[in-house]
Length: 313
Image (cartoon, rainbow, N blue to C red; front, top):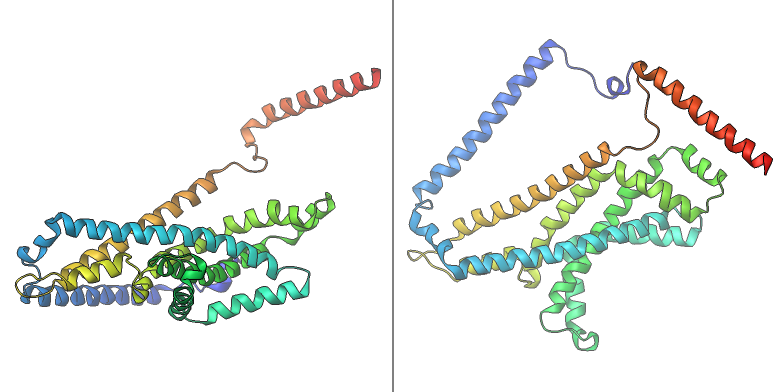
């Protein structure tokens, strides 16, 4: 019996029919909801081409572009720092030294428990009140508050992901590495962490997608990322005496979806590339046994010749 059958009961004929019915009903419900929303928006005139004409102006496109660039800038820095912090915290939590392990555990549990919005706001107030001593300009407290808040929260989550990946590596590999004379640092950096990253790559990328979406919380501290820029744009623009909030929300949502899909596609490409990597000793096909035997004999002959030469010398 396979492990999958133990954890998952294969549905029978009746269950398959019932699941298909539920799937069809669910799809129809979603389509009905989408149709209802589209009809309401159409009745309100939100699909009127005149209301979408604002995106033909260069100033509007430049504002959206600047918001996208600000979002990607925060995400790039926070993603790198959160991964680095995650590795550090994961290694510290697996440390043999109890104070180090307790400190890492406390840090992880603290920032995983506090809502991210509160963390960002508290860091922003702290940096804003001390920006003169820290040498920050007027707009830098918002940027660094968002980066630091995303780093400590997502770094704590990534630490638990990496720790689970490290613990999933077979114990024999660690023991074999120690038997070869490797130090603990070498075992961690060359044996455990690479395998943990490869095993947990989908979860790591999923958390990076969360990091990208959480950059939208910067609007609370008036950081001019995509959401803040587009909301400000919709509030300061009128079309036919009304603010084009619906149009701006649709465009902003489409941009966020495109960025997340691009990141997911990159993750899938990296994962497929990693699976295609040739590691270890390849399995010889049954039809190539004769060639394998000849190759083994040649290698043995070369080794014997080298041994004889060393003995003669």
